[in-house]
Every structure is written in structure tokens, then in C-alpha cells.
Image (cartoon, rainbow, N blue to C red; front, side, top):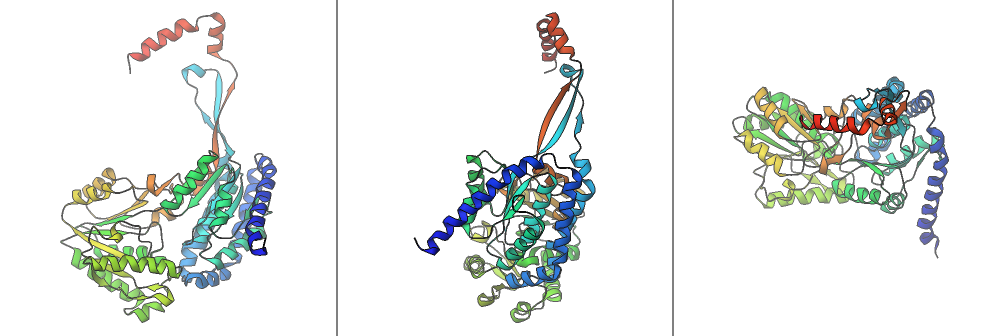
Length: 479
């Protein structure tokens, strides 16, 4: 067998060895204190901050991500997550007292937050620092061990994540493995206690299937086609500024980016004009200007550039009209921020998650038709509505379902650390961030401690069967 052929076998063996080494650590961490966990979280946070300039260089090398986006969407969320855990972990870990029921009078009950054990965190390429190390903070806060698998599509950031993790942690507590899909497959064969995955719904189904073989619990942060609604009462300049930022940050490679926009026909032209003005102001006008803009990231690789180009070509072939952008430099993995009108419902761009800088704009007259359209598809990860009409806002929020929602803003539901962040059905399972992330990596264990049992006394007296029958007859009257 050649050295090349041996490499996957050796790596799989090392993965198995590290996984087994974490078993004893996971048992020991069950009794770890808040102070011990906080010390590790603080050390991780400080190491992330210390490598700020390195994050800038790595993000630019991978897909020319602007420094401002690295600060706002990579470093800051990890630090906020860490600081939240540092401030609140003692409170989160404290057992939660529960009032007794009629049948448990004389007993004390509480919910104990126990570590799940050995956890696997699989990170994505679009925000690799944030979406790999952020969940790690929650895993540590809950008292677990972890193995990380960063995305192979951002090799410079992946290498730096490895460096940080290895500087901070011993391998029997937190380990990290780089590599292609075969490494992820090898990890998913192991009987982890919990798996936290961020990525596409398609891969999420594969991860959930692998977890089911070991009955491992999962948190799946997925994606989908997140709609935006701009009604006739909206502040058009605000909506244009917000949507252009939310859509074209990170070149549209954001799971909660607006995927398509419904605009009331009475304000559609005015809103599009505001969007064009905002795009020119922020990024320039021509393909050449925008290609070298320090404020625009590029597509992660040539394959993804070709995929997004194919979506645009298909939409154009079915009659779409370009309102802004449309230029592509495949050699630079760059696609202009593009606004599209008259997009056919039959085009791929209206069926697939775009995950790139293309934005279909659809006119509408009746908000009920928009709600019906949203409800016909899988439940999205995000929903945005710009309106000053409370009746419209309430109608949309009441009659649709999404992982999260924003009114007169975008993306902020992710940045708000006191809110649960997660999808629903096709867009995800479970929640993350802050206390919700701590609970995702914890088992909520119900504990009852008997001091004096009223029911046991009745059993001893032989009167319980009679009392139970009477109680049931009384209860049935209220059912």
C-alpha cells in the first residue's frame, strides 16, 4: 500500500484514538466547576483577540473578506458569546427548583444541567471562526469535550482555527481535525453524545442520519430561502440600506441573508432606485470598480462561482431583467451585487437557496398572496418585514413560521445574544447562543428527592386505590 493510500487509514486511526482519549475527560468534566469552565472560555476569547491581525490576513486570503466584516461577523460574535458565558455561567449551572405536584407533596424536585459528554462541531465555510468557535464556547460552558471539523473550503482560516484551539486546549479535551469530506464521514461514524452542525439542509439530513445510528442528539443550523417583505408603508431608504447590507455582506454567502424580496407595486420603483443609489455609494458602479472594492468579499471558490453563475444564466434565459449588477469575473471568483426583476417562478433561483450576491425582486399587490407564497415552501431560517403598518406586521408574524424574524431590520436576530437562534424543520433543529447554546449542549435531568411522601403513606395504609379512583373521576369532569 502506498503512502498516499495509507494516509486516510492513519488519520482515521488517529481520530479514533483522540475520541477514545476524551472519554475519561468527559467523565471528569461532569464535576467541573463554573470557575474552571470560565477560565477556559476566557483563555479562548483572549487567544482569538490576540490573533486579530492573523484573522484579517487569513480571511482575505480565503475569499477577500473585508476587515470590517471579520470584526463584526467573525471575532465580535465569538467574544460576545464568551463574555455572556463568563458573566452568566454560575446562574446557568445552578439547578432549577420545581414546585411539587399533588402526587409529589413532601418531595423536593429540580432540573439538573448535566454535560452531554463528547461533542462534535462541524463548521461551515462562510463564517468559519464565528460558527465553529461560537458553538465551542457553549460546549465548554456546559462541561463537555469537543472535536471540531472546520471547513476545508477556507484553508487559511481553518489552519488558524487549528492553531488557536491547539494553543488553548489539550487534545483530550478539545481536538480539531482538518480535511475533506472523508474526515467528516470518519467523525460521523463515531458514537458522539451530541453533534452540532452548521451547513446546508441537504448535508444536514446526512448528518442527522449518521447521528440516528448512535441515537446522538443534534443541533442543526441550516438555511433556506429567507423572504423579505417591503409594504407600501415602509421607510424605503431604511429598507434599501438594510437589505443591501444584509444581502451583499460576505458576497451573499450568509444563511440568514434575504433570499428574495416582495415589494408592494406602488413603491417598487422608488425602492429599487434607493437600492441602486446605495449600491453605487457603497461599492461603486462598474464590474472593475466593485471587483477591487475593499468592502466586498468574493465567492469562496471557482465551483461555487460557477454554481451561482448558472443560477443567473438560468434566470436570464427565462426572462429575468437585470436592474443592477450582473457582471461576473470568474477568474477572480467575483460576482457583482445583482438585482433581478421579472424572475420566473420556474427558474432555479426561485427554488434553490442562492447563497450568493443575486437578489430577485418581486412586485405584489395583496399581502395575503405573499403569505400564501411563503407558506407553500419549506419553513425559512429568517423572515424580514419592513412596514409601519402594525396590522400587516402582526398578520405576517402570526400567519408564517420561520426560525427567526426581524421587523424593520435584518440579521439582528443572530446578533442578539439573549434570543434563541435556530431554524425550524428544513431550516434547522434546536437553538444556539447564550443560555440557549448552553442548554443545547446540556442534558436537562429531572431529579426528585423524597423527604416525606404523602402518597407513600397512603399506600402503606392501603387507601391509595380508592383515592386514585375518586381523583380520576373528578379529573374526568374537567377534561
